[in-house]
Length: 182
Image (cartoon, rainbow, N blue to C red; front, side, top):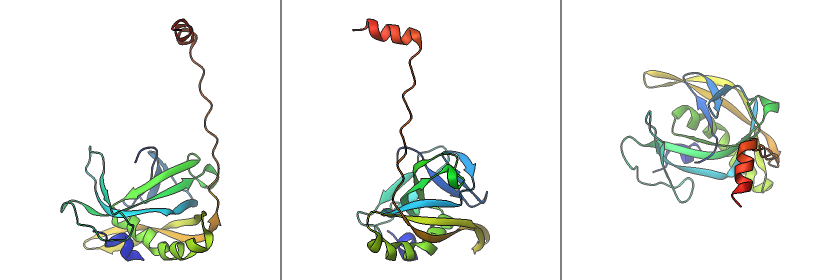
């Protein structure tokens, strides 16, 4: 199943793995989650180009795991899945986040657990995969060393409900101006 992540021709918050820093990141906050949930139905594969100062440019296959043409030499194989993080397991907040990446370390980490996730998804329809995160392992890629996250399928769960934050009251002057507008 690693082929699905490596051989393929967002709004809101995000989850990412930083191979060089050897850490996870949620919405810009470095953290050390021990578990996350992944929605296996959300997998997208394709290519991504990431340049400093630019929004990521992802091109997704219509069907995950199918080959598509590489848009440019600068686009690398990429994936995206919806993940759910929680403060209970080390994230800075509770909520659904997109994990989209074209990094080799992220593809390798998810690739090592994906066959188990894919095989278990049919027996756990509508459930999210519970993924234990257990540090990282170094991997030689050409002349460079990367840190690959260690991931293990630990079970299946329903996606938790998260309460929406209550609207903040308007300052008095704005409330008076809004009332006078009618």
